[in-house]
Image 1 (cartoon, rainbow, N blue to C red):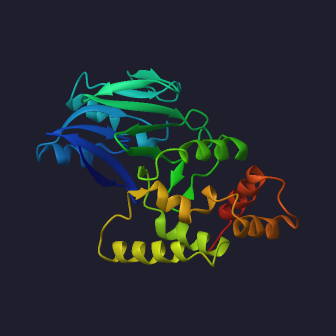
Image 2 (spheres, one colour; image 1 turned 90 degrees about the horizontal axis):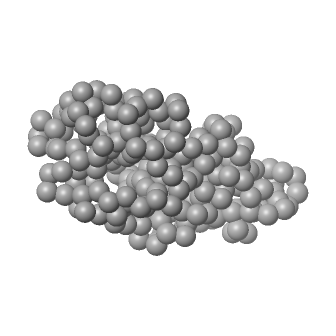
Length: 253
């Protein structure tokens, strides 16, 4: 299967995983990039939605006008007001003759899902390259648990998140863990990619485990940075995560 990312809005990506022209679309918040790709031969086979936010789901009605009956798979959330199949944690779909595994990853929203298809993780706004999503509805403990669940996937898993936030996240990660050489290398690589007009994504889960502070809450340097914010040692990894997320919410490079 061939992976590509369609840029949308200011910094969104619509992920396209295709096999011989037919494709799975993940989070088409804007129909226009998909319709433009269709003019070049793209044929959608199904849509996967990670959560209800308009920049991830807003393009679906126009796509259903273009392709009536196109299957849409989405969380069981009434805010996704579409004709679709509601799916939940632990389900295994069969699309394009491939298995699609469904994971509940609450935190950014209460009903957020992630999908794994042949070594590709489509994680919406839960896990970002060098960061994680804001907690609009969930608790720090929920988001930490969700990230830890994703961290158990194979290290070669390609992380296909919903936004191009890598350089901004890198600045924060460097403030948390300035002595991390893997992070410095990843930040330099990302800067080169963006300067060349290329996406910084997908990353790999191994990259994130080596560089992303939100996946490194057990690492001494990260715990110490969180402790400096708290004024004491964090009680556990979940409290370390909570301190980092609060810090990131107000961070300015």
